[in-house]
Image (cartoon, rainbow, N blue to C red; front, top):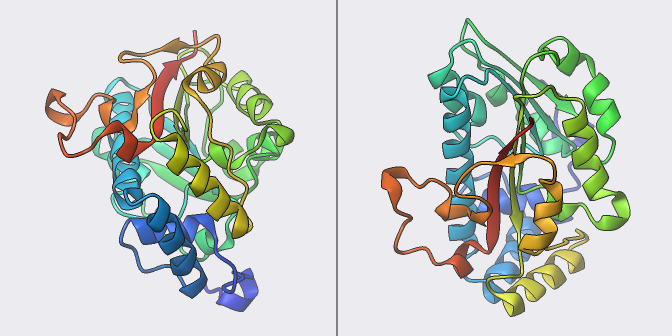
Length: 270
């Protein structure tokens, strides 16, 4: 993108959730503050790397399922640092003409956005720097309007993002406003950290992130269900991330629900 760290104001002295997630996944786009905070999370939640991996695998499976079902447009909010295969690579493998718009408010994602723009010749990809707490700005952005036809079904991907949006910032209203703009046949894909599986560890995670300057709002299964209200939730329903339609029909036996400590679901708009 031709931008240096100063121009995009990466604030490398402060830990950032996207760079911490990159560290969990074994990436290299992270810095001392991120590694220190991630290490503190791993000290209280030793399965952090495994949780990140199974969440990423859920994104791959859910994207593939929707693309194979015929959806050709994807709006991925809270994209994070590019880690191949990215959502567009999975979608376009099934649907070469698929169109994907990524959105994130982290400037480091902007610095690496070229990796998100390598579309097939038939399809399109675009990147938008935006904040999920302002859904109207996302829906009206030129990057969305020029690449996504809102009169056709869209898959809205909210993977591991909503637990960073507290109730005070209108998390539920954000999801409903985004889905209200999409036509029937569209889909909501969501994964979300939860205290249901390992409550003590979940509380410790919240404290570590908050000490690093990031608010985290873990939600129960019942609370996550509110995001899906009025939608048709696909089988197997709201389940731990590694249990959503695992490859081969069986979840990884080495991953316990407590290791994932997150729910996942895919739902269709009637």
